[in-house]
Length: 102
Image (cartoon, rainbow, N blue to C red; front, side, top):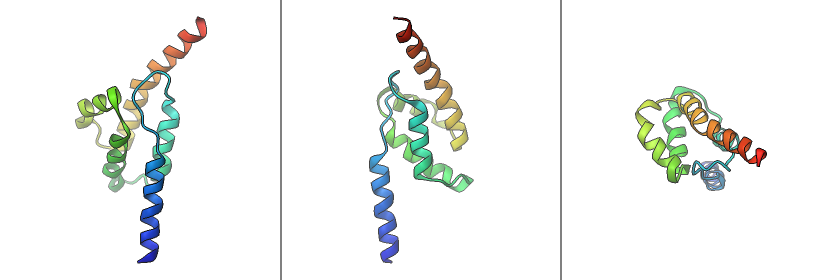
């Protein structure tokens, strides 16, 4: 019982330390995805809903709205990861290239 309480406390601390993601071009998409993957190493189908719930709680502003609008298409972690990366990485990359040209 004590071991389980310690595990729950450790997971909560890791969850609290996760960054939020708002969808701004200055945010690091890969860093956000890696932080989510690190909190829950499980990749089996049973963990998908749990991971997606964690993700949704950390998406704010336009990124949260985007998730809500696309949630029906995001059934698995792999669906989310691919769609999220395509949506946010391309805009981040474009803004960084533009800033470099200034």
